[in-house]
Length: 196
Length: 243
Image 1 (cartoon, each protein chain N blue to C red):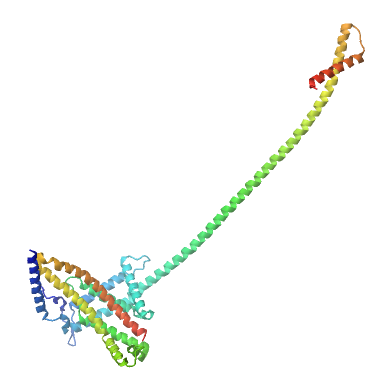
Image 2: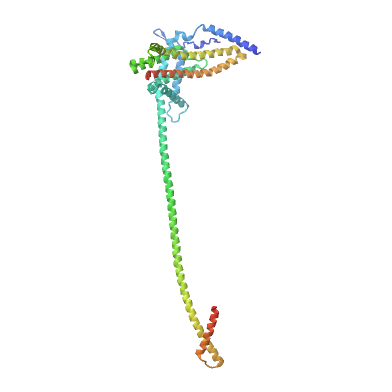
């Protein structure tokens, strides 16, 4: 089968090269000068028109387009750069403002707190002074009261004891000796009371 | 079956015969494809001139080809070649579109005709020579005298340089023409094999044909590029005299 195909191929190619060679005896149509003038004429006409139209109308437009695009891109890049710089500046400003405000707020907070603390301290101090004064006054009063109360108590004790004696015995006794006895007793009692 | 692979290069008249002073300038299939290519270039690049900052696809295409050719010219011929930009752009696009339209089956390849490529190459050659003489006067003839050549060899070298300079239009035109013709002939031959070998043996030449189509599209672009870049190099010789 394969042999048959190869044989067929070879035979046919032989036939065809032969026929092609025989056909070529007619020559190349390119070398037939019959239409040379016509081809030159139409070539000059079409190529000339093509050249004129391209160079006068189309190519300037394309180059113009390319240039405008180039310049526009450059311009856009420039403006973009400018805007970026501006943005960076603004961001910096913004940061600065925020920092400043933070510091200010801290300072304000600190000073206010100090003020409040001072105020509280002052008030407390004055209050403490007042309290001390009051305490001292109270102590003095208490002291006075103690002194007066002892005397009064001894007086009362003397009077009641003299009254008691009068009712018991029916006659007055020497007041001075009575008071000496009462004072002596009350002193003993006081010493006992004070734990000395 | 048009078995003759050269049949595709035939030029025939479309419409009436037009004659001016007994010279035949009738509209032919070659003229038709020149017109189609030029119109396609104009339409595509005109659609690419919309003034929008973000380009659409066609605009992107035209702007990319603009910068591609602009870069090619500035790389090979320097900044002095800027005034010739539109000519080289039109040349590249014309050759490219003619080559590419030739890749459509049953179409005609304008650049597969030596007369077309030769007229283009001769125009470039004459133009470059005139530019060289305008820029440098008779000093342009120094191009044929390379520096640092021993006096004994100088006559020989000058002759060789002159021959190589004069053969530029021929090499330029034959390169494009031969490439296009050879490629299309090969495709036709392989296409003929596919038909004649039929369903049994036709797959191999069909594969070749497919591969050749890809190759030919590459060649179509490459030859347009080579044509344009050689023009730039010749222009460079004329603008910046190095020798």
